[in-house]
Amino acid sequence: MAAKQKEKRVLLQGNEACVEGAIAAGMRFFAGYPITPSTEVAEQAAIRLPQVGGRFIQMEDEIAAMAAIIGGSAAGVKSMTATSGPGFSLKQENLGYAAFAEVPCVLINVQRSGPSTGLPTSPSQGDIMQARWGTHGDHPVIALAPATVEECYHLTIRCFNLSEKYRMPVFLMTDEIIGHLREGIVIPDPKTLKIENRKINKKIPPFAVPKGEIAPQSAPFGQGQRYNITGLVHREDGFPTNSTTIAGELCTRLMKKIEDNVDDIIEYEERHLEDAEVIVIAYGGTTRAATKAIELARAKGKKAGLFRPITIWPFPAKRIQEIAKKAKKFVVAEHNYGQLVHEIRLATKDAVPIEFLGKVDGTIIMPNEIEELI
Image: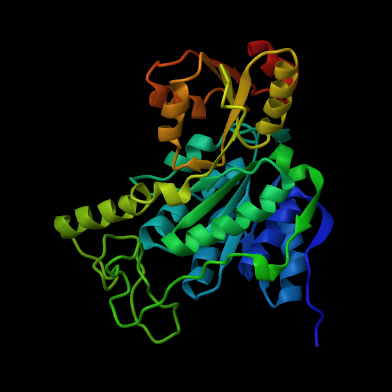
């Protein structure tokens, strides 16, 4: 009889922690294509999946990798892929398909400096807007951003839970800083983890949503429920239709399953906001410099605080509006030319002055640079 597994402390890279979190969530199929700085996700998946009865496959390109995990998920297997900027661009059409066909899956995007081939080994947060608006048409999006290696583990699990619950692709928007960072983390006892599995109801049409539920409950292919999966506007049986009425109802329902459940989805971290006059807003790898900058500022008597969106999409606009009423200034730090800062400005409606600090040269933002703006 196998010994009971307890929590354990291990030294892991952020990319490796993503794989461990995915396996803990039940991921048993990974299809990918190597691309710096995400390649270690694929390498670790290739090692670990066979050990737990899963399957790894390297596809011929990023488009095919996205298609493969859609197929894996449709067959009932929790599926994941990983990439970086250029590969994320190539996956967009199939991401739109997965969102419209309501196929659960997880994509890890380890962002790098760009555009184009850019600086493959340098940090960036330049894909934030692509995560929201990358595909054509209106579509729901959930995207999370880890700031530590331990969060890579736990947020990957959360990505799978959200994906299964809302039946849609979910993004883990990490970056080169966190992806290649090594830290000691605690892997919890698997029995303590909350794992969400998709609900199945074969008694109703595959794309019907039961009263009081959020998403359809179709069975995986091969489990006795025959239906069609298409990227076209479709009826509740999955087959295409040109009905504008159904089109409107379907597209609205897809958006509403996120809009009506933002409180369940949105997560954020706050530090020292009880007395903060200057609030630094940062996420992902940039959080680490922001946290140190606030410590330095407060040591000098400056009332500085941190707001970190963990859920990037949907954006926590309501909370931003609330903290803007108490602040004298926002400092927004991102490894890009200015992306999430636009959402912050939109949310605050000029209620508070905003100073932006961005970098696009492949170097990291330093704590003293943020402190100077504080």
